[in-house]
Structures are given as structure tokens and as C-alpha cells.
Length: 114
Image (cartoon, rainbow, N blue to C red; front, side, top):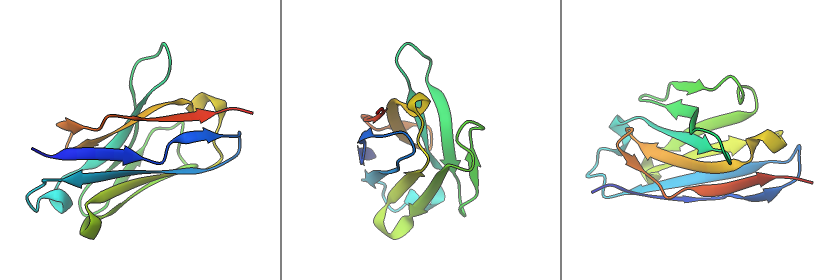
């Protein structure tokens, strides 16, 4: 079964940047043919869509992160990234990556605070 491991979360001041990584294993060579993306869940809120990258690399973003976040993938490394710039306190959440909407990572905490 596909496994996902996320990393890169942490505490950052407003206006700062973070890059999240999500490494997939046991994909049986199918990584590059499946969409991957990120969702987040803030305290006391529902999980919400953040970004999606399909094949061959088309992207889609939530309105709240457009122009600030960039999703990318490195198929040779079976890894998807989320570059987050100009972070705001409202971006504070646990961020989860998914593989084809069927396998989910354990989540990584992002906290934006001064």
C-alpha cells in the first residue's frame, strides 16, 4: 500500500515562508500518473482544500492561497511540495497530503504567529 510521509511544518512569523514535502513510497511506479495534493484543517474548522497537482503538472489552488502557495512535484523522487510564502495567521493548520485522494499522510503542523 502507498505510504506518505510529510515534513517541513513548523512555527513561522507572519509574512514568512515554509516548504512542505510529501514523499510517497510503495507506489509501484504509478506516482507520476496520479494526482496529488494538500488539504488543511485549522482548529475548530472543517478540512479544506489547499492545492492539487495533476498529470502532467496542471495545478489548482484554493482562492485563499492563490498567489502565495505553489504546489510542485518531482516524479523522480516521488515527492510533492508545497511552497508557502507570505504566510498569514489564518494559514495555521495541520496540513495533509494525499495520493490520488485515496491515501493520506499523517499531517504536519504549520503555525503562523508572532
